[in-house]
Image (tube, rainbow over all chains, first blue to last red; front, side, top):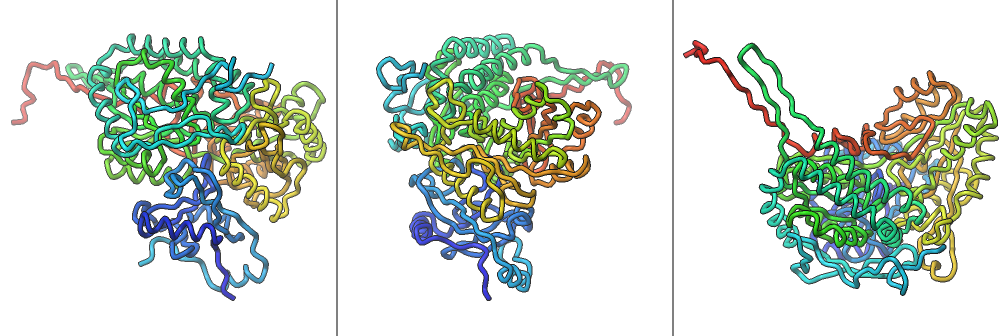
Length: 129
Length: 507
């Protein structure tokens, strides 16, 4: 059983494709804290420096999706669904000038999925080699 | 009396239909000529246009700031204090107008902007006017003929990126110490709430020399990034969240400049058993302290969004707290001074709060009250309102671990003192915390054991100048709201002077 930690809605996938035409390769990093916290940030690849404390949750529409390891500890029992809504956020996320904002929706993994994820081992940390 | 909405006949606020950037003492059109529509969360409708600034505008603002920094940095502390006091007086004289502008831009109830945002802003400028007058350098006696003198000098030109939850007050928290210390500033307001700061600038533009304070509007990726990553700033200050905080530190590392960051929290509010030892005004005060989660619709970095309650009283405490929420925290027209809960600042913020109510329910949290969007009627139907919500669950749930930034509190119980502290500290953040008890010794021990920069003890959500504010752990770097913030905006110049006429005898 292949369980994804992060997935994407068709609308968000379409936006990612369009942003890639404008900015080239993209990277997502899930934020925490206040204001725009708890929202996914989308950056031109290379803008945000990943460290060994960043967990690679997977890819959405060909873009790597990361989260800080300490935050991942509190989030790992949930699957993320990246959506898009009207708004503009206030961080440096690439979609904001278009009047839309990526949004993280979530659901709790069931027991079979948790077992499969544990069997697969811990996710990769840091940039891919 | 309900305030007349801005831009209507008889309103105390008339926004311009289009604003410009404020650079070098003048309103300047954005180089690329682009603007974006600014929406009020009260109704969800646009009410003015704001520049969509870019790197070119940031450079113009930095040109103006660098041209001004020499003279401003040499202005006497007394003269700078006079300027800050004049700004405070001007705001105070126009307090109602600014409060209404802030409410319209941000969505918060006018009760709060009148009683908190604007009076605190006034006091903040006065506080730093006093601080800079009273600040002294220091000298150290090294030996009989050698003295180390320490002088404060401004950094020069600094960048500041302001959040949307208290647009004017958070600007004041950053501007007052920076200007008092003799720096020139390039400031970028939040794109959700750019207008009220521009109204303020309209009001005070004649009080500052041209170039000392410059405002460039725009989006983070287009205007914030060229500011934060610019080699012509000597420091960057940011309030926001962790990923952008990291990005800003990365930019700062490229230029080897200091940063101050305030990145939020997930503040615990601890209620010990003895708060209900008597059914008196203190018990009521503790319940009011619980209810502070609804202040500013929960859009506060220190929102007491985790209530941690002694298991001996948790049942009756939550029963009374929920009832108090039902009667005291009711979404309504932000322009009505009787309204206690206004609109969330933006549609994306509303959607994010609803997504958290969803995962909270999926994780099994019990909804004691609220749990959904508030649908108001008439002009307010298009606004962004949420029912104040009390969830009950445990500290490992995501609604206990993430700053929802909405009127949502997650409640749980503890067995004993150590359990309370352990739950409270089981978080990535450490900005604020609350402790409620009649036992002074217990209050002290709890306050010292909590890993948070501010522990409100038998009170909550007070923000007086002269009480240091800042975070432990992932909540940030630096302490605002206190004279120690001057250190974050100043260099230390050491003159090490010998008064000995004789050679040392080395060479």
